[in-house]
Length: 279
Image (cartoon, rainbow, N blue to C red; front, side, top):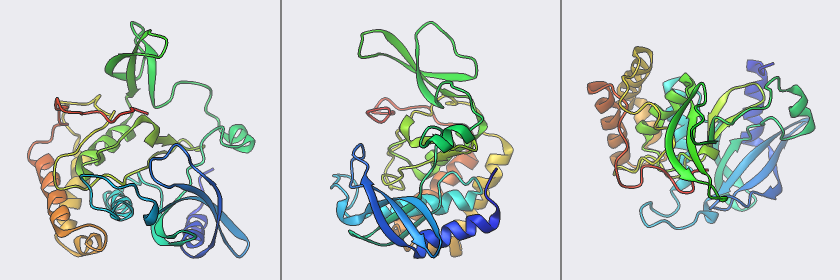
């Protein structure tokens, strides 16, 4: 069952105001990233904590800005009404201020989640398949060779929720939509995570979600984009300005208007259209 509104509100309060305990470090992350438990009274939630002090320097993103971009991506997702990004805040933690985000529990994370999930075994939303074997419900992206030297095809699911995520990535100028940044929770909801390198003024779009390149965008999606463009000119733009620059907000608004003027999914460019590694 999906959590009730009351449960969701309570979870958010626990994330914002609870006492943080570090459970472990997520070693696969490029920046300092920790799995934590936030406890308030008798309630507790698991979350991801990325302290600003642990952000690795990047040549093309100013130091200390990744947490604000993560929160900015969450706010844009919420404004669009798509709820792609899990609830996110910036607050103080054991290693100083940083980004905190509710943990997405996936099938197999715990024995309980494995038994609660009604999803049978199958491919991931973004996965590798043997070449020459078309997969029903999946869109091909590129051909490559695996570690054994066998030819494989990188594909992603042909799912409207992923398509909206692809539009979202165009809007926020996401430079790092890896396959591992697309998560499906135990209820089947699809989330996108790891948005620290987004919302740049210059074109940085790198994603594995190219399956709809050149396809027209549906009217319902465009209505949400139009609402975002309008909101950016008002109080929502002021809210975002607490986390990213006015120039970055203006660039976000230009990208929204560009999609409205030419409502077609962009084609990949020839210069690094896919993040590496892809997962």
